Image (cartoon, rainbow, N blue to C red):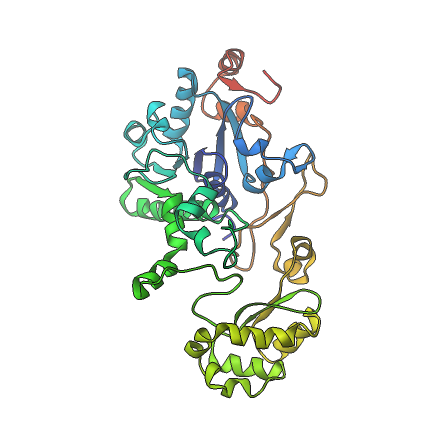
Length: 401
């Protein structure tokens, strides 16, 4: 199985991160993803730069491989007709427009479903379709704030910190893709499409789930834990002579091994540290004890010693170090592909293998409108009709018409 979604056509009316990440997942699985973009501007992420790679936004490149770009202006009736014609033939329609905008264009579920009863219609929203905030826009940082993630991120006593990756956006894309796959499977049984909805806020709540459960259980408001976690000790970064090492001794047996590896064999008999609840209660005392030892030698030395003892640990690597890490190379997660404009192009793969193989890059991220004529032709538009649409600025062709 190399292309599990081969033959599935996806109409992609999304922009920024969450929706495009969803459709990139589908494209990586073999779907034919047709990205609908505004002429002249395209996806906002095309302008999220620098950094550029060549003349293209690195952010856009990270989210839009294995897609074709159709530049069409939905302000024109003819532009909306193009989308309707595409959706009538598609298997999946994914949209992430602002609340109410898709209905104003006549492309809501109620309007589209009769055109194609087998269609899987997925809406990627900010706050969902109901509730007092459902009309508001949403971005990753807003949802990390509103969903509680920022309140538990960072170090105690310091300003709130955003998680350094768009985990809410990308998590929402993942859940949208998962919902679409489930709906496609159900369609095999019933022959009928479905409406799938997810929201950034819902995903932020899900990422906060064990913090919420801890609050429900204890009544105590979770606080930032730095590199650690509330319920396991030791499970955080400790300073070394040249950096930091993460130590994750998540059981009593691992704690004993850690004590031996660090040269503190009696510590596991100390009443303050005899089991995990005791260690959680005496977190600072244990941290100070371990840190006083780890900072005497370099990170690599401690990692080698702890791993030899079977204690889970890791150095904290910078991104440039991750890029050349032997495990990164061995994983096959960095995909090289020929690119007409970027000689050293590579991207980060879908973190899945089928039968021991990863999917490659069938299409590098497209230029705006690169496939407009190709897609319109496949939808039945004649060359003369395509020229007319381009001349009236309903669509944009790659040659600039």
